[in-house]
Length: 351
Image: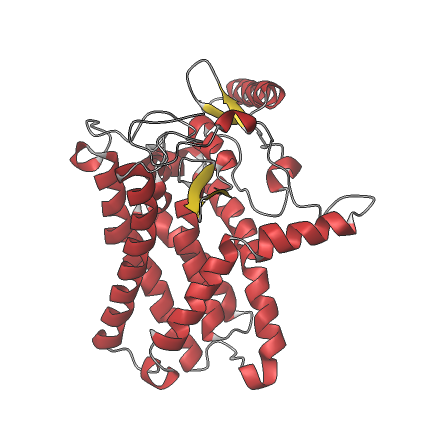
C-alpha cells in the first residue's frame, strides 16, 4: 500500500503499474504504444478498441463537449460577429479566461495544492519550484499562470475573433448542420489528428537553435512540469501554436469546429503536462485510475530532443525522434545526438 502524508488515497499500490528509479522518478511499466493505424497486417479489432477508448471516449470528448457548449450558449451569433466590436471580443476573452482558469486550476488544485494523491504516479517526486530565478516572481506556478493568462488566452481569443469574423463574412466557406451535418462531425473527429501533425511540425521548428533560444526556452524552463506549464509559452510561440485553425481559410468549417480546434489546443496541454501518469479518483468506494497520456511529453521536457508529438500518428518513430523511456531508447537518443553534433562540427566554418 502506498500512502502520502497529504493524500486521501490510501489503497493504491503504484508498483503494479511501474517502478521508481534510483532517483525516485516514476517509470511506467508499459511503454507508449502508437495507434494501430499504420500496421501490416491490419488489426481491425485493435484499431476499433483504440478508436473507442483512446480517441473517441477520451479527453477529446471532454474538449469537444466544452466546444459544443461554448458554441451553443457562450458565443456571439454570426450576425454579431460580422462587425468587430469591443463588447463581444471582451466577452470571448472573459469566457476563455474563465474556462482556462477552471480547467487548469482544477488540475492544479487537486494534484498540487491539495495533493489529493500525494506523489502516486508522479513522474518527478519533487514539487514545483518556489525559489528559482528562471521563473517570473521566483515561482514556477506563478510564472506559468502569468504566461497562460496574460499571453496564451488573449492570443487564443484573437485567433477565435478573426476566424468567427471571417466565417460570418464569407471568408471561410460555411457549413450548416442542415446540409452538412455529417461533414461537420467528420471534421470534429479529424481535429485531434490534424493537431498532432501541426504540433509536430511547429514544435520541430521551435527546436531550431535560434528559435529555441529566443522563444521556446521559456516553455522548457519547466523540466518538472505541472498543469499550468502546458500553455506557459512565449507570445511568439503562442502565435505559432494556434495557427492550425487558419487551415479553415482553405477547409470549409462551422463555428463549432473552429471553437473545438482552438479549445483542444488551449486545454489539452493541461493533461499533457500534469506531471502524473494517472489521476486516482475514489468513486462509490472504488478506485478509478484515469490515464493522462503524458509520459512521452514528460520525457520531452527532460531530454528536449525527443517526442515532439504524442498523438495518433507515429511521427516521432518515422523521423527517428521517439523515446519510450527504455534503456534502449535512451541509448539510441544519445547516439543520434552524438552523430548530429559530429556532423555540425565537421561542417566548414565561414572564413
